[in-house]
Length: 239
Image (tube, rainbow, N blue to C red; front, top):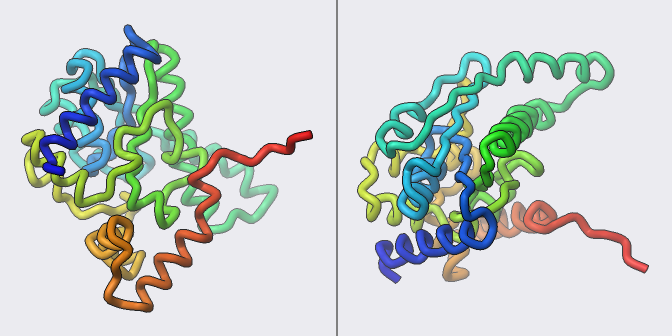
């Protein structure tokens, strides 16, 4: 399928979803400055009109906007900036009672951001976009009850290469579509450096089942197995 066709189908899906689930509501997105939130916002703007899309930047202390403000201006959507440094600092009361693991500390900002997004959304008659993609979800690279949730998910079944292709078909500048993915944390490295393999390799494996390096194949499989629970709703006991 051509990327332009993917784009058109996703735009129609977003439009249909809002017709059924919020005809007069707005799309609310957390804007990180990365390709996913940029492409998702552009798709929503084309589907609903820029006046029905709200981009929210939520930098933590010492974190830059990563051009999120510029992206919103380029797309013509409403822009809000809600710094979350003070909120994150308030979690020090938790660390006084239990020793937080490094992973637990890293997951606080995404969960705070989702709380902020829902506060904004409920105040503006909005629907929150989940901007995660299939590649990240496949290996568990999303925070449960953080960036992994939302009311609708335009990119959830698309791999990174497809999202980039859609971004180019939308005419978004390459500096945003092809930006190296990272978690935005100070002194951090790229996603691919953390994984030990590229998104290109991961995307090919997801779509075709092919991977030339057995060790990388096993690593991807292992990450996928460990994180399958993140891709499903919690199981419930049933009588």
